[in-house]
Image (cartoon, rainbow, N blue to C red):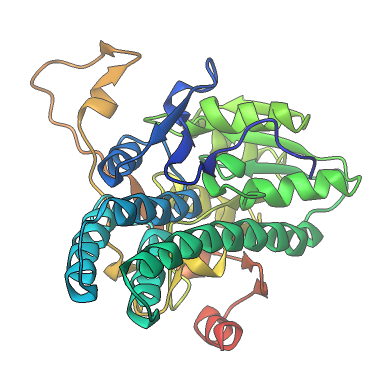
Length: 347
């Protein structure tokens, strides 16, 4: 992939620079966070989003929080560090990558020998490494997954899964971009992804940057196009994958999986292994984030519902493994039985 004209997340030595995704596609606006609380706000307000990108941002949040800790003893430092890590981890409950990053930062602190100054540098170094690992993981994932895309394919995708969501190559969108770079002619159908329109705002923007032809549709149009034989496969990302292959992803993914099964279309999950949570046996155990009613009630600042309208706004749903044809990771493609395949791959 050619060097991006935009950088979703960048470490500036003592602060983290984040591309504000809420301003896209109209404006390219960056914010700089020098406090871990600012990173938490950016994560909660979806200024940075996408499971891998949230993990990277969270790691850098720990890094800036680390630099601000005032402590003379190792014990005092570690106690204050745990408060930072636990607070960042609580910012979004579903994305596995955030917890993975927090676990790595905590482990690095526990195993690092040295004084407080050396501990701080070690944690900054670990955050940078987490970022690089995610970049490399999605690059490999995209190469692995591209073999599933044949020349002339029309692909349906949901939400946003490119560099914006991963800080690297991308997951589902990375597979598509890699296939195009290999010379395959592909076309993409992009779900708008209600209620926050990540597909309409972000995926269309990234596909435009990559010069890949696409058609934007509303979420409810997907079944229409599948039933008419116009879709060759569906590829989406993931926020958390259970040990049995059940997958949590942006709300609306489950619907697509059922529709794909009904119409004989392969449904693929693309996610780095950092998204897999083997401590969870099935999707029933995955916590689902409930977000503000205003995201549904308001459109571009205008209320479109009665004031007393009852609204439910789950950010994710869970797709049972039986609807998934394959899970694409940087370590290879896993097919059913996922419980066995995931265990072997991670071993």
